[in-house]
Image (cartoon, rainbow, N blue to C red; front, side, top):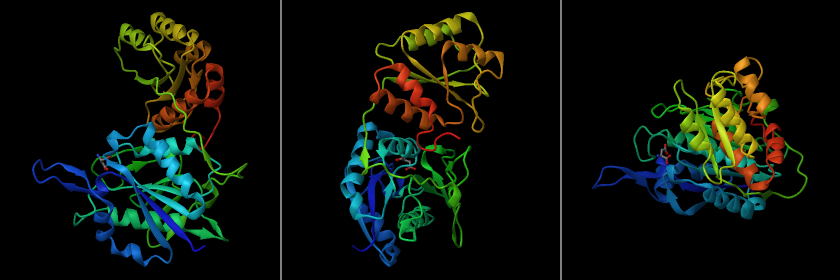
Length: 340
Ligand code: ASP
């Protein structure tokens, strides 16, 4: 079978056009993209496309959209060398993280990309992003894909998807990977950082475990946050997990009332996952007395995980395991290269 790459179009700015009445950008069809980038036909391999039943602004993405993306990948897995997912930038880091956790035995590239300016715009970044993403999705060495994980390509860099966050709403290099180097840099050449690219030995065919439980919340600490409000969030009916966005290396207030609220939540079986508000660096509970108490209560440290990856990891694990201890056990593991 000849080599081919499948583009899955979900929406986002890359394909948007201006609504003549409101002036706002809204998603448009794939033909709009294809006709603006005729170079697509110059690749030496076949490029097919699949448009999601509803093309959306990525602010409307939800876990069911991730299931749809996984289904399309699995259905087409054997027919394609790699996949490019065109997606809005706003939630791209979440979708790339979610797919990394949901897909099992992945040995092919899944490259998310999009743009800051629509493809029809004279200065669009969409052309470069799309063409490079296709080239990376089709790259092979010794008959094997060069990249075999879920990535984001944006603004000249290929990043591990579950290490990224959207950094800038204006600049073309919209994504960063604060705690893990780029997997490739695109200039005149595409320079892969091969030792860092994740290759697994599959234990079976590609599958997806798309179970999730979104009874979770992100709780970002700030000086002056009221204990009553924290208590009321943690007492939400059905709540199973909390991403606690703490300070620095995982520090939180040391007052008894706060610690009792956290302790009671842990005793009720709520998983508390401690991630840092810092862009770079990692949670090291016990380094300061203010985080030692959290450690003793049974809060789980997220090390250097991004909030986006933490949300997806916790949702997936809560969907797979009833028992909070099982969730905690798996949270600590490095499942897909999301922690160092
Ligand atoms: N609102 C858009 C989206 O995320 C932004 C973008 O694509 O850059 O769908």
